[in-house]
Length: 243
Ligand code: OAD
Image 1 (spheres, rainbow, N blue to C red):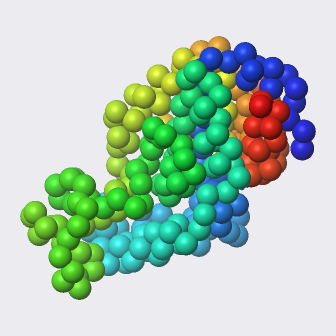
Image 2 (image 1 turned 135 degrees about the vertical axis):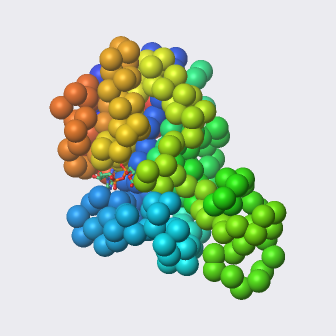
């Protein structure tokens, strides 16, 4: 896939670049996406049994163990060329904002700074009752472990269905999306709100918007540039052309 020269031109002139990523960016690291047929997590598991506050109340052990399995998976994989290219790109523009729906921390492990995490981070743990982040707890063998402050149950610090997004992150993401010259939407099915509205907001605000995804999404018909392919191949090429 050749990156369109017009997109490179827009990027070379851009002062403000904003990127939104989704699970597709980590797919080539071996982290399953959510909605890809056969391989996506939601093709195998029911979100309402694993990723809602009600699910945790009903079966905290199941939910904790499922996230523990995902946590181990994430710890065992490495950032891929897409993560690394995005980490390099932050040094090429006066203002570069990376917004992610991913909870795997792979952007940060590749060197990206100030990542706006809309859905939290699977490597962090918080108290289900108090909402405070907890970094250590006594090993009592309880599953899930207990909060060292209040004795409540601990849970992953991610956003579940039926839960609000973190307000500060959403505001920063909207600001960066509506005040950029170029916006890139990469590896997201663009169906989960409010993240899904960001490329549309960017476009309405006058940005040039590109999408990198092997499959069409609801945003594809709107995008100025559609790069239909894998992020791990396209982003390194785009970076090479920018340097
Ligand atoms: P999805 O699983 O919905 O979509 C992944 C997208 O990545 C699809 O459009 C794929 O076509 C694309 N894709 C797959 N491989 C790719 C590759 N190598 N390069 C580029 N794109 C590729 O994941 P998200 O859009 O991130 O939320 O899902 C959004 C949210 O839904 C997640 O954050 C999660 C989920 O429920 C919560 O858990 C709150």
